[in-house]
Image 1 (cartoon, rainbow, N blue to C red):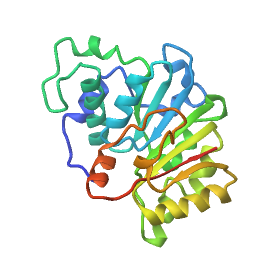
Image 2 (tube, one colour):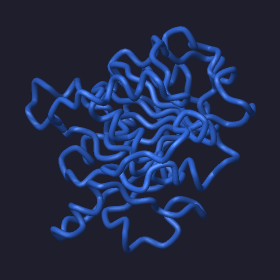
Image 3 (cartoon, rainbow, N blue to C red):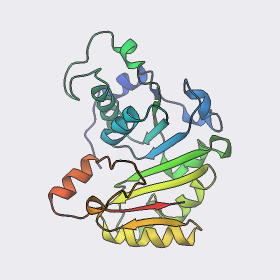
Image 4 (tube, rainbow, N blue to C red):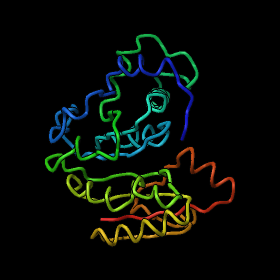
Length: 232
């Protein structure tokens, strides 16, 4: 997703206690980033952060890392988290007073900027990531760009270096979904569940609620069915 440059994003991120600007320094040491040592879940391509804001607020017994490459996106994600935690009335409103102190209530989430194609530079075997979320990633429909997909075999092999659990994947794109199923299988992942109509599927996420993203809402309103899988 392309987003206009936001001059406020970088300064806000640099002063946020839940943003990390040097993720490569924490490879194999991510448990030390958080106040409590507990399972770590990772979102690849967090976008505007609606999903990670909600899921992290609802599950204080899990630590979360959300990654994107664009400062403007991460700035919006930061503001989404603040809104969810009551630090900011909305993503466009002025922040309440004592910003930095109030942001410290966000104890189980860290945002960071990095190129996901080099994800194994910042996560290693000792990090033991328990879950990866891939929500509505770029489908890269042209053949020569397929290697850029977050579900391409090249990426899936990287995840194996630090994943000690499962991948939750959602998309609106039929071709991406079918190709991804094949990629998971070729890479030796076991596909535990598949659905071609997530919103009409009972208990797909094994007892967890389906938390929608901004893309999910948009596609659903257009009548496009959401495809999803769980891979181990």
